[in-house]
Length: 214
Image (cartoon, rainbow, N blue to C red; front, side, top):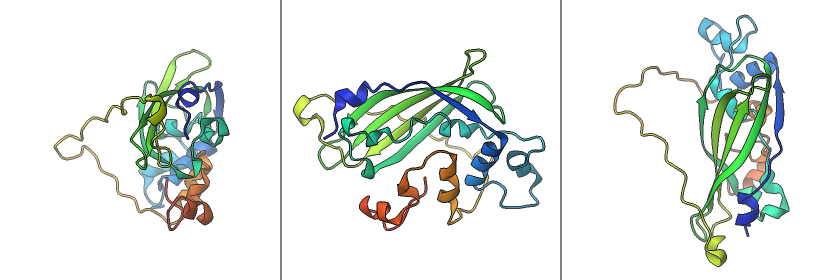
């Protein structure tokens, strides 16, 4: 059974995350950038000439790993899935460099026995030289096997704040990319090494017929 007090007050050490231009290019390839070798606009994300980092790369930097596997959490790590993600960029993300990541648990919500739980972790990326915040990202995890933890203690947080509604108008810009069958195997090299995305046996234990994409 998930231990609310331990999980909510989990202490994460600061994580020093150093990344190279190769890491930046690998992340973009994991998203499907570069499928058209003649797309010169895409080259700035996957080629060292005038390389730029995709802003969303902030989401995979400074991860504390699958800390839910620690027996002290009481969680069922096999059934957790990454449910929602958002990022707020305060400064441009360099194509290579070093950041300090600080993670903290914001909320844990019990949806009820058999319905799972929702956990929100906020990550702040800081420039070690200036101390300025570069980005903030919010990771929402669905703990499908951990509903009902509040039945004894009665302790549960309100659900995560919903994201802003999509504007009721046409998008400013659209990009369409094919989802390649090996996409999960490439993307996991950017840091999310949950075996759910690579190992058919783990996927089967989690209730899926095959490894799923991040």
